[in-house]
Image (cartoon, helix red, strand yellow):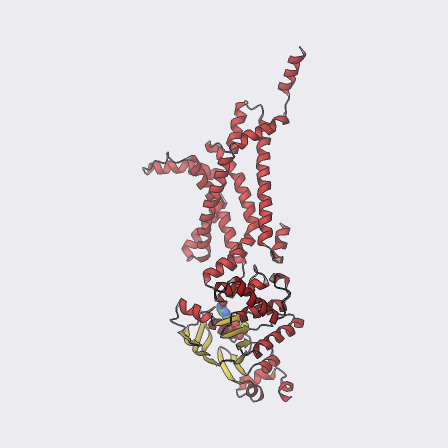
Amino acid sequence: MLNIKGIRKSFGKTPVLRGLDLNVGKGDVAAILGPSGSGKTTLLRCINFLERADEGRMTIGDASSDFKTVTKKEIYNLRRKTAMVFQNYCLFNNKTVLENVTEGLITVHKKSKREAEDIAAAMLQKVGLEDKLNAYPSFLSGGQQQRVGIARAMAQCPDVILLDEPTSALDPELIGETLSVIRQVAKSGITMIIVTHEMQFAAEIANKIVFMDGGNIIEQGASRDFFLSPKEERTIQFLSRFNLGNYYSI
Amino acid sequence: MAGSEEVKVMATKLFKPEIIPELIWKIIQAFPLTLTLAVGSLILGLIMALGIAVLCLRAPKVPRSIANGYIHFIRGIPTLILIYLLYLGFPQLMKGLGVDMSGVDKRVYLVVIFALAVSANFAELMRSSYLSVDNGQQEAALAAGMTARQGFQRIVLPQAFAVALPSLGNYIIMLFKLTSLGFVVGVVDLMGKTRILINLTYGSRRLETYLALAVIYWALCFVLERLNKLLIKRYTRGRKDLAERGAVQ
Ligand SMILES: Nc1ncnc2c1ncn2[C@@H]1O[C@H](COP(=O)(O)OP(=O)(O)O)[C@@H](O)[C@H]1O
Ligand SMILES: [Mg+2]
């Protein structure tokens, strides 16, 4: 499904991604963990071409490109196979909730307005916002905004949905509602890459864990193995900060 | 006897407000020129400003600092001086270079001069309004698969416009009033017409005539302000943050 080989990215002289490989299969839910500054956001942004990686290859479904030589057309093509859920939501402020979801469907997927609105309304119902269709983002709580963000991403029917710390800008009492929507998305069988600091949550929904540190993938593997028997010293150190025992001891 | 005394009183009456409506009617005949000057320089000024704003935002260092310098330069010059410099000074310079500028219409000069005068403020406004829109808006559009152009037109531009509207409205109102300086080169706009009417009565009805002119400008600005309020309301719909900012102004 999504395959990355040798991706490198530097900001100026600072290397942020140091040639890492990532493979996410169809229907996988991959959680990327790691301390802040380890390059998780940059990796997602490179996958979505919001940042241009310096080197490496990426394949998503049937489309493949080299980061060094990728053309504009290939970028648009690859981008359409992914959708992004942003840490700070990034809803279109000048659009209603419904329009936030229909916008991409109409301009990118060339759906009629009617059709787009039907799809959007159905998506928004799934995230529990059917009564907010005509509200503007600034009138919504963070949790509601993020659920719109998820609906917007889902409506595009992407091959992979990328979520960058979708709950870390939320007030504690709003995290739960957002996590439960993500849980539901994860169960629907869509391929997902999620950066998160919610260890328990990652352990629960992800079947694959990727641990990053200092621009490298230190360890990756099946969720159970990763949490129960981490192999790398740095992983063990990182995990020791979280009390996960109770989740996997059940 | 009694009749001629009455005439005397009438003639010496210092202030005759009852003639103001008629004066308004006479002055307003010159409105088309004021409108032409304002709209012409508004459009030209916006085009110039767009170029300057793009330079300020996108260009390499040298053209960018030239654009910034231009903004500072224009902002620091009283428009009246700009008129004298360009209307009187520039043709003189061109003549020295063998180009005869005497065929160029005064109104063309004025449109260009007023456009220059407002272009700096417009450019600065465009730049700051564009920058006020969070980068994440365009990124979200791109992430949704939209082209950079679609993202700009459908997401970023409307938001920047909403931010710019209150000041834009004020600048347009200022521009309307600014065109009254055109009289110094002898065009018959509202102000020019007013001065002609005053000269016809040998200055005896100066107060009434200027009051009539003030009423016209005031009404014009009132309409523009109303229009701007309506537009602001429309473009900040659903924007709690912007609506609050607008309410403060
Ligand atoms: N646009 C940028 N310009 C310069 N440095 C950046 C930029 N974005 C991220 N970085 C740097 O790259 C490193 C990794 O950042 P990031 O990918 O955001 O990490 P994470 O998401 O894991 O916290 C950090 O040291 C950060 O300072
Ligand atoms: Mg991050």
